[in-house]
Image (tube, rainbow, N blue to C red; front, side):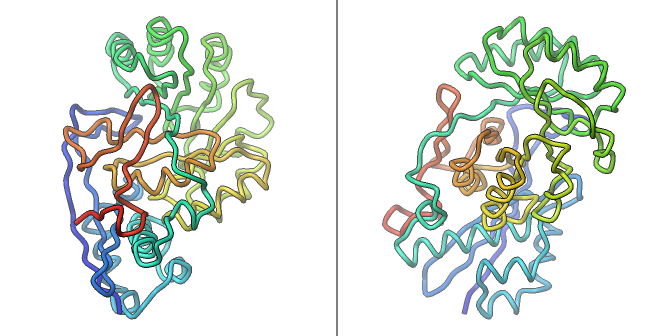
Length: 333
């Protein structure tokens, strides 16, 4: 038998971050603990904000199937009991962690991800006044890869300011569904001239077909357009890159399946994150070892992270060995 407990938590941010249509001032997450024979596995998810998931709704979702879950469930059958989303992601992470502690085999080994290593990650610059974005980019001076959040308004001024501040940086942009096909067409020559190397989710979900036939000189990445495995086939021929997020797809188990399917379909896998602490970033770091692009910087925006915390240095992230390792590595209580 398994014993499941869920705990909602709020984590304040250093300062608000703005994206198209949203402003975030704190991170709300749900921690799921699964105990078996005195051994505790932990997982965290913030849910998918644009699906209106929050800790209370995720907890209620888990409560509805608690009896089935606690009777003994595997990661495989969890995919049949709960749909993609934060509730399943938190439980899936807890099951991986529990399995590692019980078996003595790390998640990295079981997932075929190789030995843990520091991952080169993008650092996010939230949408703001051009001078403030330029200053934020300068503050990330040791980070060679930047991702700029855009809004669909005054974006070129923002981009030019950041490029002037960081002429050497790899720059990707994330429109968060904020563009139209017409505005994207108008922006493309300027983006190419400014050395932009990735355009993430330019159009709203449901309008992806408008991108067919677009000969973009810059790779296009799907984020909101691809939630889980079932969305991948229709992304083929439209997007070059798919951003996998554990909160969207329902956890590490599904994410690992997605990595292989994305490559089979001729696209590149990328791993990203919703708002999260180190506990939420840890399983995403496993996926990151198998991806071409990594965007796992959420803990950087917290006033305070868990301890021990992820280490961000010279544009890379390394997670501490407190999740997904045999019990002798230590466990989070």
